[in-house]
Amino acid sequence: MARESEETFNVANKKKASNTLTPASKRDVFLYRQIGINFLCRSRMAEIEFPKAIGISSATFADVITQKHGGLVEELPDQKLSPRQLYLSSEVQVLEGAIKYCPDLIPDDVKKKFNEFIKNEKKNKKSNKK
Image: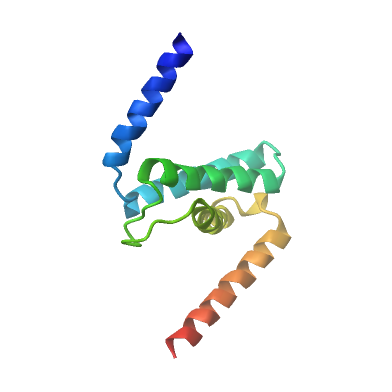
């Protein structure tokens, strides 16, 4: 009986929520990013291996935007982001913050790859402007 009422509650809430989804504001995204960074740093302090820690941190960030905002972000109006797009974006944002706030807990090879990625992104943006 409890299970049935729980399912009914969840379905009813999903119907209500679908009518009231608002895009994640810059403030929302900042908060979710900070939570992801904190989770990654604390996971690493607890000696959780890096791939698991970044995966769960990034997935949590992406899931919140998917579930609470339907994949909508104010900075990208009229565009619903897929869970995969959100995950990849969140991974970059969480890693960038973790390198800043807990650099000793991020493997050196990961920091090197990240810096190369950023350098290539800057090059690509410059060449696209020409």
